[in-house]
Amino acid sequence: MKEENNVTDLSKVIAYAESILGNDYTGHGFDHVKRVAGLSQAIIDADELAVDRFVVQAAAYLHDTVDDKVVADVTAAYAEVRVCLTAAGASEAQTKEIFSIIENLSFSKELLQGAQVVSVEGRVVRDADRLDALGAIGILRTSYFGGSHQHPIHVSDLAPKTFQNHEDYRKGTTVINHFYEKLFLLPEKMTTDYGKKEAQRRVVFMKDFLEEFYAEWDV
View 1 (tube, rainbow, N blue to C red):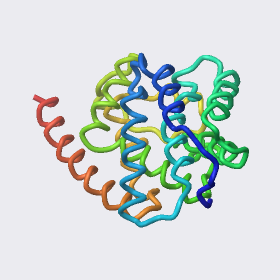
View 2: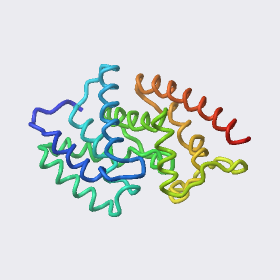
View 3: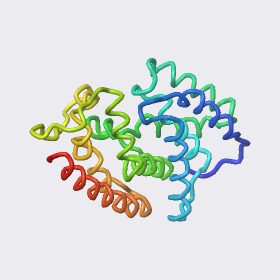
């Protein structure tokens, strides 16, 4: 998608995202989307991609403001995002692309419904979002989310699951199983060069962590 010449104000998008996500305690808060925006920029720069930077940044900041893990009324959330984008000066084409990205970004939609982002902008934001699920940050976010939903840390005889529907996916199993049920599947799904390399680096750290975890757990 070519960068448009209309005047846009990303600060309005950032302020809206912070108002919705600033008090989130599931690991999908404003700190998360801010990192996704930063990682998106790192991907664009490293891979020298020609993109509409407003679309990328806006989608990065807004993607969890419509997530059912965060908001109670998803339909109303999308309507509020449209108002936000209009106030920020986004064109209809930009708004349509941002909606396409945030509607199809999630791992669960891809896994269970075959959803895909097809634009370069979408692939950048998706890789950035998934990178923030890996590494040291990913370990803490997984633990944070699991604790907020009363998931056990680890059950030795409970094997990781292959989920068949959204409801089961949302229930999850254990914090440690989530590494195998989702997180370790992410590197092979990266589509940018930066995303592929950084995902592999972060997974090495996570596997080292698990070795130490099992040694301490099974005393």
